[in-house]
Image (tube, rainbow, N blue to C red; front, side):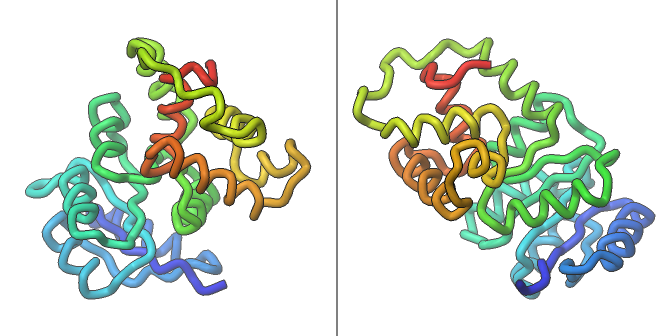
Length: 216
């Protein structure tokens, strides 16, 4: 498997250089560049075509949310993993709406950061457990969808996969629990994304709770 090509974006030099050094010591990760701000990040994404942008949120000029939204508007293939000290609900939900596929706080371990990079490269989403919990709490305060999905919209196995994904299970964990391959789980998730018109795993979880197909 090719190395994951990462662009590190943080306005604090010590953090930016520390992350670059840390990730550079890990096999399978190639830090292709660093940026000190949002405008520079957009230029380097266009020039370097990284697999993942490891992005701070609170920066002068363009914020991380604005950078993520602009990358989505441009159709960039780079996945966005947010790594920030700002984990309040407003920042979390704004980043997810802007297209971020991973959200970690800066006390995350190196293993957690690398796991998030790999997960996002595979087309999935990775949320810090505290972030996912607050997301679900927010959904509890949101009125449920008024129209449930048709009974035959999802197959029984797709419902099994959906409920496990909503419970925070990874693809490998779902595969082990259902006694199927990870490839089969990915196929089911692709079908679920298409049937529910969800853009990514985070939206799929939201769909599951809003429709009552999964419960906290």
